[in-house]
Length: 127
Image (cartoon, rainbow, N blue to C red):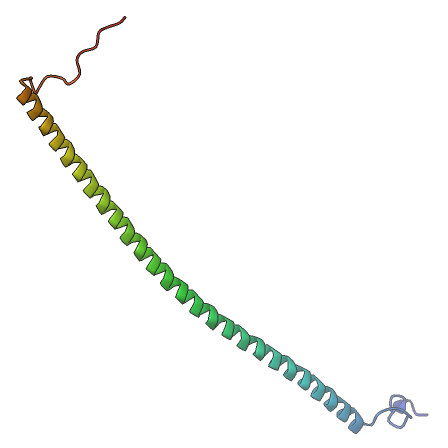
């Protein structure tokens, strides 16, 4: 046997021909392509699901923001009304105190008492 033909194994039994090798490689590529196509389809479905979820969450977020804005507005209005009521009540109390003080002074004057005299007599020093 010539040493140049040592690596020539085309005629051995069980060795695939170049055409069979190409066909086998083509089937492997086809199988890989199908697997990648299935992965791509699943990935697209996942992305579409995420987009739907994102849209739903965006709508919910916008709705909650609107509710929060309305609640803040209502709270601000209630706080303003409470402040108005407090101010009005304080003014009314001050006016009533002034009126009571005026009436007390008139009563003292009509009784003949000194309106500027202290209302309570001095207490004795018990020490």
